[in-house]
Image 1 (tube, rainbow, N blue to C red):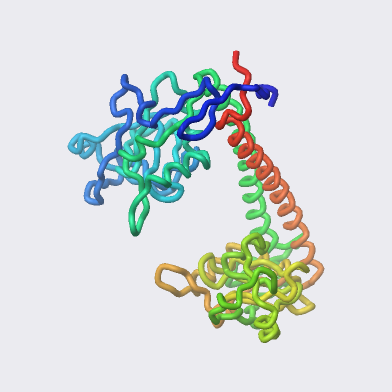
Image 2 (cartoon, rainbow, N blue to C red):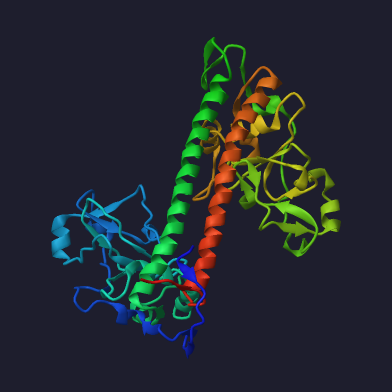
Length: 435
């Protein structure tokens, strides 16, 4: 980052603390263009009766990410006639949209190029800054932790927090000279490009994994003869078995209230939210007291056991590694795997599309999916004849998982770099070279 340099600037005290003397503080609305129509105004009030299958697309709060536009499969439209009737405000590529509700309140993004005409909903403010302010810089500043914390001071609402456009207009923004704004945005954009490229590698590798899993879990390695089964064509010497034919040791974790037994240091408690595809997240895990845990020794997990989500993203599974031996599960499905079966292979099968379809057919619940134990054990599983082949399949997928993990670590480093740059550049602690 040769564009940056330490400058022994003079600072001045402002409502937002010390800033370089060349910088200014302005309420957000004062940055809006006086030359553009609807430069600081809310989107349109659109009711369900106004919707149509095609026409002018409505950009909604879910499309507004932190500094990025989030494309969704589900899209909503109004007709051209309704657009004219309601006198809607069209939005364009490069316009900034600021979301006034849903965490984090005040997040913003720029509209990318779209082939269709666009409007936005009433809970989103359309912001078109004057030419002396760089839109990309403002998006970075508006999405900074410092600014989002400022926005929170203005929010209100009992059931759902939001900020009014009037209060949003009052939020103070740190504004460097234009050339410095542009250089800051350029530096941060370079890091964002690296994050986006790494994200694309992650997604491509995940797609590769998905295809490999489908191929290996149904066709195996090197087979030439196949037979038709209820789960499609499989190698002739493979079998279809229910989970309770593979193992009879399938249980559910603790289902009693345990908050009074939470301690800072103790026995890890694995909740459904801790289980991710192929691993258990330990960062936010809670712990149980040793006394309480010892009274539930029969429920303690062993190395090679599989924990599976019972409620929510049902069926998602992970294998217990050395760091979680002796942990307890809270309302998790728990499978002890026999010696003639690979834990990693069975976990892969649970995470496959083949198993997930069955889980969702089994599921119960009004609004939230539940996978009951009595249904879970009925899961039909394609079983390779040899443990050796199960292990080979697991090994191939594990290699792909390592690639994904490597890319994710790389992405995390870029995100940390960006976070540090934002803290330095958007406060003026570190200045940038400008032409």
